[in-house]
Amino acid sequence: MLKEYIEIKDEVKKALDENKPVVSLESTIISHGMPYPQNVETARKVEKLVRENGSIPATIAILDGKIKVGLNDDELEYLGKAKDVVKTSRRDLPFILSKKLNGATTVASTMIISEMVGIKVFATGGIGGVHRNAQETFDISADLMELANTNVAVVCAGAKSILDIGLTLEYLETHGVPVVGFGTDEFPAFYTRKSGFGVDYKVENTKELAEAINMKWKLNLNGGIVIGNPIPTEYEMDSDMINNVIENSVKEAEENNIKGKEATPYLLSKIKDVTKGKSLEANIKLVYNNAIVGSKLAYDLLNSK
Image (cartoon, rainbow, N blue to C red; front, side):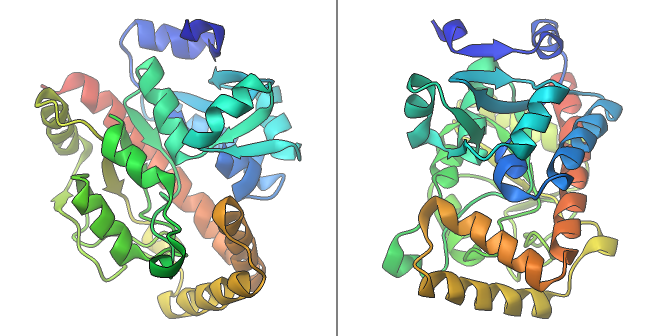
C-alpha cells in the first residue's frame, strides 16, 4: 500500500535491502532554513560527508504528492529554488500527498518517513521545541511528540536557540526521551556549545552510543533519542551577542504577530541579517558536523550488539 506513495532512490533501497547504514536528512533546511544557493550547496556537501563516513544519505521530501526517500541533483536544485514548497510536519502529510503538492519535511515528518522505510538515524541542524512564552501561546513543536513516539535517533546541535531550551528539555524528560551529550555534559544551544542545561548522559563515541540505542529498542522502549552534538569550537558564536539578537528578534516577531510554522524561518532569517551572515555560516558548519556523527552512528548501530 505504502509503495504507491513512496519512491525510494535506488542507491538507498539497495542499502536498506542489504542492511547497510543509511542516514536520513530533512528538506525544510533546504527550502525554508537557508537562502539559495547556500541551501543546495550545503545539502550536497552533507550528502558527501555522510558517504565519506560510511553511510548512504537519504534526503527526504515530497514532490508532486509523492514521498521521495533520496533525491537526485535536479530535485535538490528544485527544492532550493522553488517558492511553492510547503513546510510539512505530521499534520500536513495527508494533505500534501492527497493534493499532490510539494513539501519540505520537518524533523517530525522526516522521522515518520524514516521509520516507515526502516532508517534508524537522522541527522539535522537543531530540533524544534517549546517556544519562548509557550505558557501563554502553547507554541510547542510537533517534533517533541514525534521524539516521544518514533524509533529514530536524531543527531542535532541541540534545540534551536530561538526556543526555551529549559522547557524543551523538561518536555522531553516527561515523555521519557533520552537526551545525550556527544562528548559533552551540557546540552548544546545550536549556535553555541553551552546552554546552561545538562544532559541525561554523556557519551564519548558512536560505538558507546549505538550500544545504548540498541538496548533501548530491544527493551521495546519506543521513541527516539536526542543526541546533542555541539557546534565545533572554531565556529561557535558569542553567546551573549546571539542571545541578545534572538531576544530582539523574538520580540519583533511577536509585535508582527508571526507565529506557528512561520516563526522559525522568520527568526532564522532575521538573525542571519543582524549577524551579517555569521549565523548562517555557523548553521552550515554544525549541520556538517552532525552529518559526520550521524553517518558513523548509523554504521555502529548495525555493527553493535
